Amino acid sequence: NVGPGTFFRLEDTRSMKMDYGLVRAIISKAGPRNQLKVRTASAVMGVRGTDFVVESVGATNQTALTLIRGSVSLQPEGVAVAKEVKTGETALAEVAKPPETYRTSQVELKRALVLTEKTDQAPATEPVTESIKQLEAQAKATTVEDIVGYASNPEEKERLQKAAEKAPDAAALNAAVVRMRVARAPEESPRSELIREEFKKIAPEAAKPVEKNEFDRYFDTP
Image (cartoon, rainbow, N blue to C red; front, side):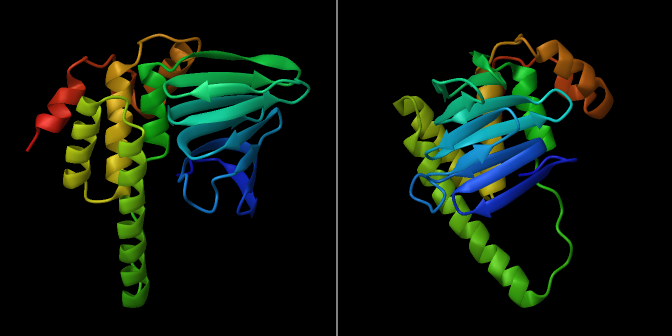
């Protein structure tokens, strides 16, 4: 999922160069990109199968990496040792500085969801539409396997399986996972106030704190 105003290149199946913008990527551990390297102006990331959001701010050359599930190795340019960023964490990277890691806030997760949500597709011919349906089904099956495999406890696994049954496609299922993370995330982080100010312009409702029972309400909805 690609946010607006983003410029990146897939150089091959295992290499991505991102100049600026925001991308949410879901990499299957069993897929062809399970050794993916993501490069920005300030850092390189090693992906082994995960759901993550990476943002490259062109004006400051700062890289922000958020892990929704899994883990990613993050190494700023000019720093000898990589940092392992894990589920529920965000790391900020700048050239020649050790990355700063903290728990991802509610508003950061909601921003990632808003900026990478699925958009409407233009009408397509019947063969193309059928091909898209097949790819969607394959994507959902892979996503279900990946999400359930990362469940932290039996209760979460059961809820994720129920979400998988209700979700019409992989995009809806991945949105449900972000909602789960939002409900359990802290309200404040080093970037939360900055992002709230941004959200006042693009998505005012997303700037509000989340009630802790939102996750339960989501799954209790018929």
